[in-house]
Amino acid sequence: MTSAALLAMRERVVAAILSNPVVGPDSAATLARMNDPVQDCTFEELGFDSLARMEFCIFLETEFGISISSGEVEGSPSINAMAAYLAGMNAGR
Amino acid sequence: MESSLLANFRETCAKHGERPAIIDARGNLSYAEYGAQVGRLAASFHEQGLRLGEAVAVSITDERSHLLASMALVRLGCPQITFGGHDQPAQRQGLIARCRAVAVLATDASADDGAPVVIPDFERAASASACTDASLPVPDDGTVAALQTGSGTTGTFKVIPTSHRSLMLQALTRHMAVPTGIEYVPSPVEFLYSKKHRLRSAVTGYTGLLHATEHSHIPDICRRYGVDILRLSPAQMQSLVDFGIRLPEGVAVYVGGSRISGPLRAAFQSRQVRSLYVEYGATETGNIAVASPEMHDRYPDGVGPPLQGVQLEIVDDSGRPLPPNVEGLIRIRTPGMSSGYFDDDELTARTFPDGWYQGGDRGALTDDGVLVFGGRADDMMILNSINIFPAEIEKVAEGFPGVIDCAAFPMRSPVHGDIPMLAVVGAEACDLKALMSFCRERLGIRAPRKVVALAEIPRNPQGKVVRRELSARAADGEFQ
Image: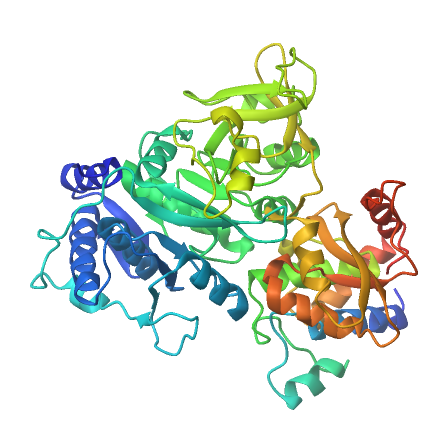
Protein backbone atom coordinates (compact mmCIF):
# COMPACT_ATOMS: atom_id res chain seq x y z
CA MET A 1 0.00 0.00 0.00
CA THR A 2 1.44 3.40 -0.97
CA SER A 3 1.41 6.29 1.43
CA ALA A 4 -0.52 8.25 -1.22
CA ALA A 5 -3.32 5.67 -1.06
CA LEU A 6 -3.31 5.88 2.71
CA LEU A 7 -3.43 9.68 2.65
CA ALA A 8 -6.30 9.65 0.17
CA MET A 9 -8.21 7.27 2.42
CA ARG A 10 -7.48 9.46 5.42
CA GLU A 11 -9.06 12.38 3.59
CA ARG A 12 -12.17 10.32 2.99
CA VAL A 13 -12.40 9.42 6.66
CA VAL A 14 -12.07 13.09 7.62
CA ALA A 15 -14.73 14.06 5.06
CA ALA A 16 -17.05 11.44 6.56
CA ILE A 17 -16.55 12.86 10.04
CA LEU A 18 -17.09 16.46 8.92
CA SER A 19 -20.32 15.46 7.20
CA ASN A 20 -21.61 13.54 10.21
CA PRO A 21 -25.00 14.97 11.21
CA VAL A 22 -24.65 13.75 14.81
CA VAL A 23 -21.13 14.70 15.93
CA GLY A 24 -18.09 16.70 14.87
CA PRO A 25 -14.93 18.43 16.12
CA ASP A 26 -15.61 20.66 19.12
CA SER A 27 -12.77 23.12 18.52
CA ALA A 28 -10.49 24.57 15.87
CA ALA A 29 -7.58 22.71 17.49
CA THR A 30 -9.33 19.35 17.06
CA LEU A 31 -10.18 20.21 13.47
CA ALA A 32 -6.54 21.10 12.77
CA ARG A 33 -5.47 17.79 14.28
CA MET A 34 -8.00 15.92 12.14
CA ASN A 35 -6.62 17.54 9.00
CA ASP A 36 -2.97 16.90 9.87
CA PRO A 37 -1.87 13.42 8.74
CA VAL A 38 1.03 13.45 11.20
CA GLN A 39 -1.44 13.61 14.06
CA ASP A 40 -4.42 11.45 14.98
CA CYS A 41 -7.79 11.81 16.68
CA THR A 42 -9.96 9.10 18.23
CA PHE A 43 -13.65 8.70 17.48
CA GLU A 44 -14.29 8.70 21.19
CA GLU A 45 -12.93 12.22 21.64
CA LEU A 46 -15.10 13.33 18.73
CA GLY A 47 -18.10 12.10 20.69
CA PHE A 48 -19.01 9.16 18.47
CA ASP A 49 -21.95 7.08 19.68
CA SER A 50 -23.79 4.24 17.95
CA LEU A 51 -25.85 6.58 15.77
CA ALA A 52 -22.75 8.58 14.80
CA ARG A 53 -21.01 5.34 13.78
CA MET A 54 -23.98 4.32 11.65
CA GLU A 55 -24.00 7.71 9.93
CA PHE A 56 -20.25 7.48 9.35
CA CYS A 57 -20.67 4.09 7.64
CA ILE A 58 -23.57 5.34 5.55
CA PHE A 59 -21.55 8.31 4.29
CA LEU A 60 -18.67 6.03 3.23
CA GLU A 61 -21.16 3.87 1.37
CA THR A 62 -23.14 6.62 -0.40
CA GLU A 63 -20.09 8.72 -1.28
CA PHE A 64 -17.41 6.13 -1.99
CA GLY A 65 -19.17 2.77 -2.26
CA ILE A 66 -17.31 1.42 0.79
CA SER A 67 -19.46 -0.98 2.87
CA ILE A 68 -18.48 -1.46 6.50
CA SER A 69 -20.43 -2.17 9.68
CA SER A 70 -20.46 -0.13 12.90
CA GLY A 71 -18.49 -2.96 14.49
CA GLU A 72 -15.63 -2.34 12.09
CA VAL A 73 -15.59 1.33 13.15
CA GLU A 74 -15.28 0.21 16.74
CA GLY A 75 -12.43 -2.06 15.70
CA SER A 76 -10.47 0.88 14.23
CA PRO A 77 -11.16 3.61 16.76
CA SER A 78 -9.21 6.59 15.36
CA ILE A 79 -8.86 8.45 12.07
CA ASN A 80 -5.50 6.91 11.20
CA ALA A 81 -6.50 3.40 12.29
CA MET A 82 -9.68 3.66 10.22
CA ALA A 83 -7.80 4.98 7.16
CA ALA A 84 -5.29 2.13 7.42
CA TYR A 85 -8.08 -0.43 7.81
CA LEU A 86 -10.01 0.89 4.77
CA ALA A 87 -6.86 1.23 2.64
CA GLY A 88 -6.01 -2.38 3.54
CA MET A 89 -9.50 -3.48 2.54
CA ASN A 90 -9.14 -1.71 -0.80
CA ALA A 91 -5.71 -3.22 -1.43
CA GLY A 92 -7.01 -6.69 -0.65
CA ARG A 93 -9.78 -6.48 -3.26
CA MET B 1 -61.24 -3.27 37.35
CA GLU B 2 -57.48 -2.91 37.60
CA SER B 3 -55.67 -3.50 34.31
CA SER B 4 -54.18 -6.95 33.81
CA LEU B 5 -50.82 -5.31 33.06
CA LEU B 6 -50.69 -3.64 36.47
CA ALA B 7 -52.09 -6.72 38.21
CA ASN B 8 -49.32 -8.83 36.68
CA PHE B 9 -46.68 -6.31 37.64
CA ARG B 10 -47.93 -6.18 41.23
CA GLU B 11 -48.11 -9.97 41.40
CA THR B 12 -44.56 -10.30 40.08
CA CYS B 13 -43.31 -7.76 42.63
CA ALA B 14 -45.08 -9.61 45.45
CA LYS B 15 -44.23 -13.15 44.39
CA HIS B 16 -40.64 -12.59 43.29
CA GLY B 17 -39.78 -9.68 45.57
CA GLU B 18 -36.19 -10.81 46.07
CA ARG B 19 -35.48 -11.30 42.37
CA PRO B 20 -33.60 -8.47 40.65
CA ALA B 21 -35.88 -6.58 38.28
CA ILE B 22 -33.05 -4.38 37.05
CA ILE B 23 -29.30 -4.84 37.02
CA ASP B 24 -27.17 -1.86 36.03
CA ALA B 25 -23.98 -0.03 36.98
CA ARG B 26 -25.62 1.10 40.24
CA GLY B 27 -26.31 -2.49 41.32
CA ASN B 28 -29.44 -4.59 41.60
CA LEU B 29 -32.97 -3.30 42.06
CA SER B 30 -35.24 -6.05 43.40
CA TYR B 31 -38.81 -6.49 42.20
CA ALA B 32 -40.08 -5.56 45.68
CA GLU B 33 -38.15 -2.28 45.58
CA TYR B 34 -39.01 -1.67 41.92
CA GLY B 35 -42.73 -1.99 42.66
CA ALA B 36 -42.47 0.28 45.71
CA GLN B 37 -40.51 2.97 43.85
CA VAL B 38 -42.89 2.90 40.90
CA GLY B 39 -45.82 3.39 43.29
CA ARG B 40 -44.17 6.29 45.10
CA LEU B 41 -43.09 7.92 41.85
CA ALA B 42 -46.66 7.62 40.52
CA ALA B 43 -47.89 9.32 43.69
CA SER B 44 -45.42 12.16 43.22
CA PHE B 45 -46.41 12.55 39.55
CA HIS B 46 -49.99 12.82 40.76
CA GLU B 47 -48.93 15.55 43.17
CA GLN B 48 -47.20 17.29 40.27
CA GLY B 49 -50.53 17.38 38.48
CA LEU B 50 -50.53 14.38 36.13
CA ARG B 51 -53.85 12.55 35.85
CA LEU B 52 -55.18 9.28 34.45
CA GLY B 53 -55.73 9.48 30.69
CA GLU B 54 -53.41 12.46 30.10
CA ALA B 55 -50.65 11.85 27.55
CA VAL B 56 -47.10 12.47 28.76
CA ALA B 57 -43.81 12.42 26.84
CA VAL B 58 -40.73 10.81 28.39
CA SER B 59 -37.35 12.34 27.55
CA ILE B 60 -34.93 10.68 29.99
CA THR B 61 -31.73 9.05 28.82
CA ASP B 62 -30.65 7.36 32.05
CA GLU B 63 -31.98 3.84 31.63
CA ARG B 64 -33.06 3.03 35.16
CA SER B 65 -34.71 6.44 35.64
CA HIS B 66 -36.48 6.11 32.31
CA LEU B 67 -37.92 2.71 33.18
CA LEU B 68 -39.02 3.80 36.66
CA ALA B 69 -40.74 6.88 35.21
CA SER B 70 -42.25 4.79 32.46
CA MET B 71 -43.73 2.19 34.82
CA ALA B 72 -44.99 5.01 37.08
CA LEU B 73 -46.90 6.41 34.08
CA VAL B 74 -48.32 2.93 33.49
CA ARG B 75 -49.45 2.91 37.12
CA LEU B 76 -51.04 6.36 36.77
CA GLY B 77 -52.72 5.43 33.51
CA CYS B 78 -50.99 8.14 31.47
CA PRO B 79 -50.40 7.19 27.81
CA GLN B 80 -46.69 7.71 27.19
CA ILE B 81 -44.73 8.94 24.20
CA THR B 82 -41.02 8.12 24.14
CA PHE B 83 -38.57 10.75 22.90
CA GLY B 84 -35.14 9.74 21.66
CA GLY B 85 -32.08 11.87 22.39
CA HIS B 86 -31.57 12.39 18.66
CA ASP B 87 -35.15 13.39 17.86
CA GLN B 88 -35.34 16.86 16.37
CA PRO B 89 -37.20 19.66 18.23
CA ALA B 90 -39.69 20.03 15.36
CA GLN B 91 -40.56 16.32 15.57
CA ARG B 92 -41.04 16.48 19.33
CA GLN B 93 -43.19 19.59 19.20
CA GLY B 94 -45.31 18.07 16.44
CA LEU B 95 -45.98 14.92 18.46
CA ILE B 96 -46.75 16.86 21.64
CA ALA B 97 -49.32 18.96 19.80
CA ARG B 98 -50.84 16.06 17.91
CA CYS B 99 -51.18 13.77 20.94
CA ARG B 100 -52.15 16.70 23.17
CA ALA B 101 -49.49 15.71 25.69
CA VAL B 102 -49.78 17.69 28.93
CA ALA B 103 -46.16 17.35 30.07
CA VAL B 104 -42.66 16.18 29.25
CA LEU B 105 -40.84 14.13 31.87
CA ALA B 106 -37.21 15.23 31.77
CA THR B 107 -34.28 15.50 34.14
CA ASP B 108 -33.63 19.17 33.40
CA ALA B 109 -36.03 22.05 32.97
CA SER B 110 -34.49 23.48 29.80
CA ALA B 111 -36.35 21.20 27.37
CA ASP B 112 -38.56 23.26 25.08
CA ASP B 113 -40.87 20.77 23.46
CA GLY B 114 -44.11 22.68 23.66
CA ALA B 115 -45.36 21.24 26.98
CA PRO B 116 -44.42 21.97 30.60
CA VAL B 117 -41.48 19.97 31.96
CA VAL B 118 -42.08 17.73 34.96
CA ILE B 119 -38.90 16.68 36.73
CA PRO B 120 -39.30 13.33 38.49
CA ASP B 121 -38.03 13.22 42.05
CA PHE B 122 -36.23 9.88 41.94
CA GLU B 123 -34.49 10.42 45.27
CA ARG B 124 -37.76 10.90 47.06
CA ALA B 125 -39.27 7.88 45.33
CA ALA B 126 -36.36 5.82 46.61
CA SER B 127 -37.10 6.81 50.19
CA ALA B 128 -39.51 4.55 52.01
CA SER B 129 -41.11 7.47 53.86
CA ALA B 130 -42.57 9.04 50.70
CA CYS B 131 -46.31 8.71 50.15
CA THR B 132 -47.68 5.70 48.28
CA ASP B 133 -50.02 5.23 45.36
CA ALA B 134 -52.70 3.45 47.46
CA SER B 135 -55.33 6.17 47.03
CA LEU B 136 -54.76 6.90 43.32
CA PRO B 137 -57.35 5.94 40.69
CA VAL B 138 -56.51 2.70 38.90
CA PRO B 139 -56.32 2.32 35.10
CA ASP B 140 -58.24 -0.53 33.48
CA ASP B 141 -57.46 -2.83 30.56
CA GLY B 142 -58.68 -0.35 27.98
CA THR B 143 -56.47 2.51 29.22
CA VAL B 144 -53.82 3.44 26.69
CA ALA B 145 -50.36 2.61 28.05
CA ALA B 146 -48.24 3.86 25.16
CA LEU B 147 -48.55 6.00 22.06
CA GLN B 148 -45.96 4.37 19.84
CA THR B 149 -44.83 6.11 16.68
CA GLY B 150 -43.97 4.70 13.31
CA SER B 151 -43.30 5.81 9.77
CA GLY B 152 -46.42 6.53 7.74
CA THR B 153 -47.20 5.94 4.05
CA THR B 154 -48.75 9.36 3.59
CA GLY B 155 -45.81 11.32 4.90
CA THR B 156 -46.91 11.80 8.50
CA PHE B 157 -46.03 9.70 11.52
CA LYS B 158 -48.50 7.05 12.40
CA VAL B 159 -49.28 6.92 16.10
CA ILE B 160 -50.24 3.51 17.49
CA PRO B 161 -52.14 3.55 20.78
CA THR B 162 -51.32 0.39 22.73
CA SER B 163 -53.66 -0.42 25.60
CA HIS B 164 -52.72 -2.00 28.92
CA ARG B 165 -54.44 -5.18 27.74
CA SER B 166 -52.51 -5.22 24.43
CA LEU B 167 -49.17 -4.65 26.11
CA MET B 168 -49.83 -7.50 28.55
CA LEU B 169 -50.93 -9.91 25.82
CA GLN B 170 -47.94 -8.95 23.68
CA ALA B 171 -45.69 -9.73 26.63
CA LEU B 172 -47.27 -13.16 27.00
CA THR B 173 -47.23 -13.98 23.28
CA ARG B 174 -43.52 -13.48 22.62
CA HIS B 175 -41.23 -16.48 22.52
CA MET B 176 -38.68 -16.79 25.33
CA ALA B 177 -36.08 -19.54 25.28
CA VAL B 178 -36.03 -19.71 29.09
CA PRO B 179 -38.96 -19.22 31.52
CA THR B 180 -36.99 -16.82 33.69
CA GLY B 181 -33.54 -15.22 33.66
CA ILE B 182 -31.53 -12.20 32.61
CA GLU B 183 -32.54 -10.42 29.44
CA TYR B 184 -30.15 -7.96 27.82
CA VAL B 185 -31.09 -5.42 25.14
CA PRO B 186 -27.92 -3.43 24.35
CA SER B 187 -29.79 -0.70 22.46
CA PRO B 188 -30.73 2.29 24.65
CA VAL B 189 -34.16 2.37 26.28
CA GLU B 190 -35.25 5.32 24.13
CA PHE B 191 -35.41 2.96 21.12
CA LEU B 192 -38.91 1.61 20.65
CA TYR B 193 -37.71 -1.98 20.18
CA SER B 194 -35.63 -1.83 23.32
CA LYS B 195 -38.25 -0.14 25.45
CA LYS B 196 -41.13 -2.40 24.58
CA HIS B 197 -39.13 -5.50 25.46
CA ARG B 198 -38.09 -3.97 28.77
CA LEU B 199 -41.70 -3.20 29.67
CA ARG B 200 -42.77 -6.69 28.61
CA SER B 201 -40.02 -8.19 30.76
CA ALA B 202 -41.00 -6.13 33.79
CA VAL B 203 -44.51 -7.60 33.81
CA THR B 204 -43.40 -11.19 33.21
CA GLY B 205 -40.70 -11.38 35.87
CA TYR B 206 -37.51 -11.32 33.81
CA THR B 207 -34.43 -9.50 35.04
CA GLY B 208 -33.48 -6.64 32.75
CA LEU B 209 -29.79 -5.87 32.37
CA LEU B 210 -29.37 -2.18 31.50
CA HIS B 211 -26.03 -1.50 29.89
CA ALA B 212 -26.07 0.48 26.64
CA THR B 213 -22.70 -0.19 25.04
CA GLU B 214 -20.51 -0.40 21.99
CA HIS B 215 -21.18 -3.47 19.88
CA SER B 216 -17.71 -4.83 20.65
CA HIS B 217 -18.37 -5.08 24.39
CA ILE B 218 -21.57 -7.11 24.11
CA PRO B 219 -19.93 -10.58 24.43
CA ASP B 220 -17.96 -9.49 27.47
CA ILE B 221 -21.03 -8.08 29.20
CA CYS B 222 -23.01 -11.25 28.47
CA ARG B 223 -20.25 -13.29 30.08
CA ARG B 224 -19.87 -11.01 33.08
CA TYR B 225 -23.56 -11.03 34.02
CA GLY B 226 -24.53 -14.50 32.81
CA VAL B 227 -27.06 -13.21 30.30
CA ASP B 228 -29.70 -15.75 29.23
CA ILE B 229 -31.49 -13.81 26.50
CA LEU B 230 -29.83 -11.27 24.22
CA ARG B 231 -31.85 -9.11 21.84
CA LEU B 232 -29.86 -7.65 18.95
CA SER B 233 -30.57 -5.31 16.10
CA PRO B 234 -29.50 -6.56 12.67
CA ALA B 235 -26.60 -4.05 12.74
CA GLN B 236 -25.37 -5.37 16.10
CA MET B 237 -25.64 -8.91 14.79
CA GLN B 238 -23.52 -8.00 11.76
CA SER B 239 -20.93 -6.33 13.99
CA LEU B 240 -20.64 -9.41 16.20
CA VAL B 241 -20.03 -11.54 13.12
CA ASP B 242 -17.30 -9.10 11.93
CA PHE B 243 -15.64 -8.97 15.33
CA GLY B 244 -15.26 -12.61 16.04
CA ILE B 245 -15.29 -12.02 19.83
CA ARG B 246 -17.51 -14.90 20.75
CA LEU B 247 -20.62 -14.74 22.86
CA PRO B 248 -20.64 -17.25 25.71
CA GLU B 249 -22.38 -20.56 25.01
CA GLY B 250 -25.84 -20.74 26.47
CA VAL B 251 -27.00 -17.27 25.40
CA ALA B 252 -30.18 -17.35 23.33
CA VAL B 253 -30.01 -14.58 20.74
CA TYR B 254 -33.14 -12.94 19.30
CA VAL B 255 -33.01 -10.64 16.31
CA GLY B 256 -35.72 -8.96 14.30
CA GLY B 257 -36.76 -5.66 12.84
CA SER B 258 -35.76 -6.24 9.25
CA ARG B 259 -34.95 -9.05 6.86
CA ILE B 260 -32.07 -11.18 8.18
CA SER B 261 -30.40 -12.83 5.22
CA GLY B 262 -29.54 -16.52 5.07
CA PRO B 263 -25.76 -15.90 4.81
CA LEU B 264 -25.82 -13.60 7.87
CA ARG B 265 -27.72 -16.24 9.87
CA ALA B 266 -25.24 -18.93 8.81
CA ALA B 267 -22.23 -16.74 9.64
CA PHE B 268 -23.68 -15.89 13.03
CA GLN B 269 -24.44 -19.51 13.85
CA SER B 270 -20.97 -20.68 12.91
CA ARG B 271 -18.92 -17.76 14.28
CA GLN B 272 -21.08 -16.82 17.26
CA VAL B 273 -23.70 -19.05 18.86
CA ARG B 274 -26.03 -21.59 17.34
CA SER B 275 -29.07 -20.56 19.39
CA LEU B 276 -30.28 -17.82 17.04
CA TYR B 277 -33.98 -16.93 16.93
CA VAL B 278 -35.20 -14.72 14.07
CA GLU B 279 -38.38 -12.91 14.99
CA TYR B 280 -41.12 -11.37 12.92
CA GLY B 281 -43.51 -8.82 14.35
CA ALA B 282 -44.96 -5.33 14.09
CA THR B 283 -45.56 -2.51 16.52
CA GLU B 284 -49.28 -2.83 15.78
CA THR B 285 -49.43 -6.53 16.68
CA GLY B 286 -46.51 -7.53 18.88
CA ASN B 287 -44.56 -10.63 17.91
CA ILE B 288 -46.07 -12.78 15.18
CA ALA B 289 -43.67 -15.62 14.39
CA VAL B 290 -40.24 -16.89 15.33
CA ALA B 291 -37.75 -19.09 13.46
CA SER B 292 -35.83 -21.29 15.87
CA PRO B 293 -32.13 -22.21 15.49
CA GLU B 294 -32.65 -25.46 13.57
CA MET B 295 -34.87 -23.83 10.90
CA HIS B 296 -32.39 -21.44 9.27
CA ASP B 297 -30.60 -24.03 7.11
CA ARG B 298 -33.83 -25.21 5.58
CA TYR B 299 -35.57 -21.83 5.26
CA PRO B 300 -32.92 -19.06 4.99
CA ASP B 301 -35.67 -16.43 4.59
CA GLY B 302 -38.08 -18.12 6.99
CA VAL B 303 -39.38 -16.33 10.04
CA GLY B 304 -40.88 -19.48 11.50
CA PRO B 305 -44.37 -20.69 12.28
CA PRO B 306 -46.87 -18.26 13.85
CA LEU B 307 -46.66 -18.04 17.65
CA GLN B 308 -49.32 -19.58 19.83
CA GLY B 309 -52.58 -17.64 19.59
CA VAL B 310 -51.61 -15.91 16.33
CA GLN B 311 -53.77 -16.36 13.24
CA LEU B 312 -51.95 -15.80 9.97
CA GLU B 313 -53.15 -15.98 6.36
CA ILE B 314 -51.68 -15.25 2.96
CA VAL B 315 -54.17 -13.50 0.70
CA ASP B 316 -54.31 -11.95 -2.75
CA ASP B 317 -55.00 -8.28 -3.44
CA SER B 318 -58.76 -8.84 -3.01
CA GLY B 319 -58.37 -10.59 0.33
CA ARG B 320 -58.88 -14.17 -0.92
CA PRO B 321 -56.75 -16.76 0.90
CA LEU B 322 -53.98 -18.33 -1.19
CA PRO B 323 -52.71 -21.96 -1.06
CA PRO B 324 -49.36 -22.89 0.56
CA ASN B 325 -46.13 -21.84 -1.18
CA VAL B 326 -47.82 -19.02 -3.09
CA GLU B 327 -46.63 -15.55 -2.19
CA GLY B 328 -49.18 -12.88 -1.32
CA LEU B 329 -50.05 -10.32 1.33
CA ILE B 330 -49.61 -11.34 4.95
CA ARG B 331 -52.55 -10.70 7.27
CA ILE B 332 -52.56 -11.41 10.96
CA ARG B 333 -54.62 -11.46 14.10
CA THR B 334 -52.72 -11.54 17.38
CA PRO B 335 -54.10 -11.55 20.91
CA GLY B 336 -52.49 -8.20 21.73
CA MET B 337 -52.95 -6.30 18.49
CA SER B 338 -53.91 -2.64 18.49
CA SER B 339 -57.27 -1.72 17.04
CA GLY B 340 -56.12 1.15 14.85
CA TYR B 341 -54.19 4.39 14.57
CA PHE B 342 -54.56 7.61 16.49
CA ASP B 343 -56.49 10.28 14.52
CA ASP B 344 -56.25 8.49 11.16
CA ASP B 345 -59.45 6.59 10.31
CA GLU B 346 -58.56 6.20 6.67
CA LEU B 347 -55.24 4.48 7.44
CA THR B 348 -56.94 2.36 10.12
CA ALA B 349 -59.59 1.17 7.66
CA ARG B 350 -56.94 0.31 5.08
CA THR B 351 -54.52 -1.45 7.44
CA PHE B 352 -57.02 -3.26 9.68
CA PRO B 353 -59.57 -4.77 7.23
CA ASP B 354 -62.19 -7.01 8.91
CA GLY B 355 -60.30 -7.24 12.17
CA TRP B 356 -57.05 -8.35 10.51
CA TYR B 357 -53.80 -6.41 10.51
CA GLN B 358 -52.47 -6.12 6.98
CA GLY B 359 -49.43 -3.88 7.09
CA GLY B 360 -48.11 -4.42 3.57
CA ASP B 361 -45.60 -7.26 4.08
CA ARG B 362 -45.56 -10.05 1.51
CA GLY B 363 -44.78 -13.69 2.17
CA ALA B 364 -45.75 -17.33 1.69
CA LEU B 365 -46.52 -20.20 4.03
CA THR B 366 -44.69 -23.48 3.37
CA ASP B 367 -46.45 -26.86 3.52
CA ASP B 368 -45.27 -27.26 7.09
CA GLY B 369 -46.53 -23.83 8.13
CA VAL B 370 -43.34 -21.76 8.12
CA LEU B 371 -43.75 -18.13 7.07
CA VAL B 372 -41.22 -17.09 4.44
CA PHE B 373 -40.83 -13.32 4.26
CA GLY B 374 -41.09 -11.95 0.73
CA GLY B 375 -40.51 -8.20 1.11
CA ARG B 376 -42.80 -5.21 1.00
CA ALA B 377 -45.89 -4.66 -1.13
CA ASP B 378 -45.17 -0.94 -1.17
CA ASP B 379 -42.11 1.27 -1.30
CA MET B 380 -41.27 1.21 2.39
CA MET B 381 -37.53 1.30 3.08
CA ILE B 382 -35.93 -0.38 6.10
CA LEU B 383 -32.70 1.26 7.28
CA ASN B 384 -31.21 -0.72 10.17
CA SER B 385 -34.74 -1.67 11.28
CA ILE B 386 -36.06 1.91 10.97
CA ASN B 387 -39.07 1.96 8.64
CA ILE B 388 -39.11 4.89 6.23
CA PHE B 389 -41.69 5.66 3.54
CA PRO B 390 -40.58 7.71 0.51
CA ALA B 391 -43.70 9.87 0.90
CA GLU B 392 -42.59 11.34 4.22
CA ILE B 393 -39.26 12.44 2.76
CA GLU B 394 -40.87 13.80 -0.40
CA LYS B 395 -43.48 15.73 1.56
CA VAL B 396 -40.75 17.55 3.49
CA ALA B 397 -38.52 18.15 0.44
CA GLU B 398 -41.41 19.58 -1.57
CA GLY B 399 -41.62 22.38 0.96
CA PHE B 400 -38.06 23.53 0.26
CA PRO B 401 -37.49 26.59 -1.96
CA GLY B 402 -36.55 25.73 -5.53
CA VAL B 403 -37.63 22.05 -5.51
CA ILE B 404 -39.67 21.43 -8.66
CA ASP B 405 -39.98 17.64 -8.46
CA CYS B 406 -38.44 14.98 -6.25
CA ALA B 407 -38.44 11.27 -5.43
CA ALA B 408 -37.01 9.37 -2.48
CA PHE B 409 -35.56 5.93 -3.15
CA PRO B 410 -33.34 3.36 -1.45
CA MET B 411 -29.71 2.68 -2.16
CA ARG B 412 -29.41 -0.99 -1.22
CA SER B 413 -26.62 -1.63 1.24
CA PRO B 414 -25.38 -5.09 2.20
CA VAL B 415 -24.79 -3.84 5.74
CA HIS B 416 -27.45 -1.24 6.54
CA GLY B 417 -30.42 -2.32 4.41
CA ASP B 418 -32.02 0.58 2.54
CA ILE B 419 -30.15 3.89 2.68
CA PRO B 420 -32.69 6.62 1.85
CA MET B 421 -31.64 8.95 -0.98
CA LEU B 422 -33.44 11.84 -2.62
CA ALA B 423 -33.43 12.75 -6.31
CA VAL B 424 -34.37 16.35 -6.98
CA VAL B 425 -35.26 18.36 -10.02
CA GLY B 426 -34.52 21.85 -8.84
CA ALA B 427 -34.39 25.42 -9.97
CA GLU B 428 -30.85 26.75 -10.42
CA ALA B 429 -30.97 28.48 -7.06
CA CYS B 430 -31.90 25.27 -5.22
CA ASP B 431 -29.20 24.64 -2.60
CA LEU B 432 -28.87 20.86 -2.22
CA LYS B 433 -26.73 21.04 0.88
CA ALA B 434 -29.26 23.27 2.61
CA LEU B 435 -31.99 20.87 1.48
CA MET B 436 -30.16 18.02 3.24
CA SER B 437 -30.07 20.00 6.49
CA PHE B 438 -33.70 21.05 6.03
CA CYS B 439 -34.71 17.39 5.78
CA ARG B 440 -32.52 16.34 8.71
CA GLU B 441 -34.09 18.96 10.97
CA ARG B 442 -37.56 17.71 10.18
CA LEU B 443 -37.01 13.99 9.71
CA GLY B 444 -34.10 13.11 12.01
CA ILE B 445 -32.89 9.58 11.34
CA ARG B 446 -35.52 9.20 8.59
CA ALA B 447 -33.82 11.90 6.51
CA PRO B 448 -32.25 11.18 3.12
CA ARG B 449 -28.49 10.60 3.41
CA LYS B 450 -27.73 12.03 0.00
CA VAL B 451 -29.48 14.45 -2.32
CA VAL B 452 -28.74 14.22 -6.05
CA ALA B 453 -29.80 16.63 -8.79
CA LEU B 454 -31.43 15.11 -11.86
CA ALA B 455 -32.81 16.62 -15.07
CA GLU B 456 -35.99 14.61 -14.55
CA ILE B 457 -37.49 12.00 -12.24
CA PRO B 458 -38.05 8.67 -14.03
CA ARG B 459 -41.79 7.90 -14.12
CA ASN B 460 -43.90 5.22 -15.79
CA PRO B 461 -46.70 6.14 -18.23
CA GLN B 462 -49.13 6.44 -15.29
CA GLY B 463 -46.85 9.02 -13.68
CA LYS B 464 -45.64 6.74 -10.86
CA VAL B 465 -42.00 7.17 -9.86
CA VAL B 466 -39.84 4.24 -11.02
CA ARG B 467 -37.81 3.90 -7.84
CA ARG B 468 -36.24 0.65 -9.03
CA GLU B 469 -34.45 2.56 -11.77
CA LEU B 470 -33.11 5.13 -9.31
CA SER B 471 -31.93 2.34 -6.99
CA ALA B 472 -30.21 0.59 -9.89
CA ARG B 473 -28.43 3.79 -10.87
CA ALA B 474 -27.29 4.23 -7.26
CA ALA B 475 -26.00 0.64 -7.24
CA ASP B 476 -24.00 1.39 -10.41
CA GLY B 477 -22.24 4.18 -8.56
CA GLU B 478 -23.81 6.96 -10.62
CA PHE B 479 -24.56 9.11 -7.57
CA GLN B 480 -21.20 8.73 -5.78
